[in-house]
Length: 409
Image 1 (cartoon, rainbow, N blue to C red):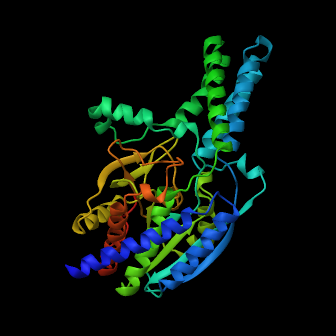
Image 2: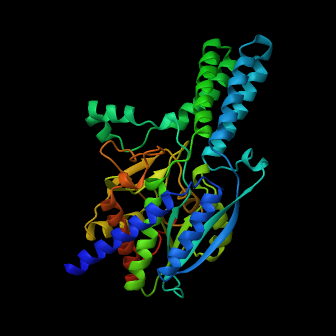
Image 3: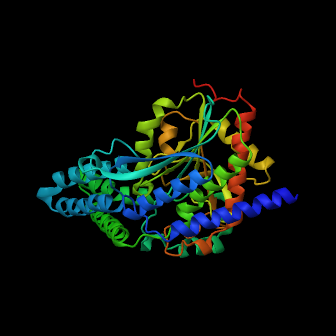
């Protein structure tokens, strides 16, 4: 018992150290503060016994400014389509802008984003466990932080949770907010095609609201990002120390923190370019950590801003859930996200993938993209549970070499 208590105390000290130090840095994607955070994290992981590289990679900027510009284009196209002579061209322009938005938020080819100049970010890649093992567990986080904005005010969801708790309890998929943005070009384009002025006006108004909301995000300050996502970064360091004290033979553990996640995936593409070719899909698993500082851990089954995609290989998610149950940190199952995370990239590449997040009683991430996302508002008990779950998953994979991905049809 005393050993477990000592480890819990050690974890807490490490977790608080990492979060409090990095929260003081303004870590916008591609910023000097993000680079400083990557260097500090690399040094801290080296001190925990890891071999570490800081890898500079390119990313294409996006999110609020880019999608806001596309929403503004839809607004303009609606005004054009509202005139009889401009109806056809306005409808076509709205449809193209809508397709570009869907392409970008769903991590498609991103044809518009790739016409911009690439920027640089830093991924931290640390090797723990058995460096010569054939099997690999990648524990993935990100160390950049997001801007805030009025759209992230959580009072409405809190009110709904208090007023209609039964409805909220039955909802295991987050609200599809990007659908509202995409509804605008759909209304303008369909209204133009069917000569429905009411639909054109509604789509134009909705596009203007979307453009205003995204412009507000683009000019808002970067949050401290303690929950999203220093909570996960801190778990990487605490896990590194645990694996150094009690090694896991037979399993290589990569502790990876990517940059520029908050542009709707940035640095993870660079990690994929550099490492996926050397990571065997039959012997590699991705355990992704994102915003784990809310009261209760949850296992996300899939994600999709536009179309929902369950992660590849349910057997790995079942293994994570069993390991958590055995470790005394049971996970809420069945959750699906309408936002995107770095988990979508290894999932689409065919790797068994699981995503750990955390939720409050209203099934929301606490202080999500708000200025109040500070170290003192973290639930460190949940972070400690995440450390235990990650270690349990690593030991389960190391102890059972016959575990592999489920066969594909």
